Amino acid sequence: MGNNPDEFLMLSGIQHFVFCPRQWALIHIEQQWEENVRTVEGQHLHRNADQPLVKETRGKKKIIRAMPVQSKTIKINGICDVVEFINDSNGVFIPDLEGYFKVYPVEYKRGKPKENDADILQLVAQAICLEEMLLVDIDKGYLFYNDIKRRVEVKIDQKLRKRVYDITEKMYDYYKKSYTPKVKTGPFCRSCSLKDICLPNLMIKEPVSRYIERKISE
Image (cartoon, rainbow, N blue to C red; front, side):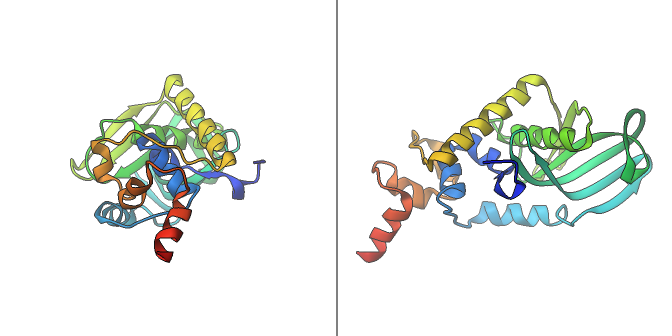
């Protein structure tokens, strides 16, 4: 893929990939999807955040919701739920806001903090996009969890950035090869929205799309 944003992979796919590379491939390569309670609740939770470029001012803080972001370095694009711009003389000048600001992404999540780093790495990817677009340095971001009704601060360091670079590189490798990996099943499979499509096919070599076509014709 070149530098055409229309050909970039979805930033939200990082969360899917960390949870399960197979789930990511089913969604983003084979384009399978099933709605369940989790996805519906997630859409409802995001509804308040997903208001295109709504700007709000609260004291020294300016808030932009549903901000489109992209990175030509790791070739991803997507939407930040919320980006907070805090007026700070030590920050970077943002022409559109006519001032100096420090920038922090805020991602809204249903449930509570996860045992894996899927949410954290998605947030870090957002920070990488913002840094590239705004020429800023971002040292932290926030995850707001609906179940606990509060935000969790995430320190964004080079180790986390490297993990995002490694993950997106592997995503592109799979995508270019149209490769859907097999994975070891586990308890996490029960909460996957694609388990009914994925599990019957885990032990056979044909693609999911071909499996579904075969079942329909039977």
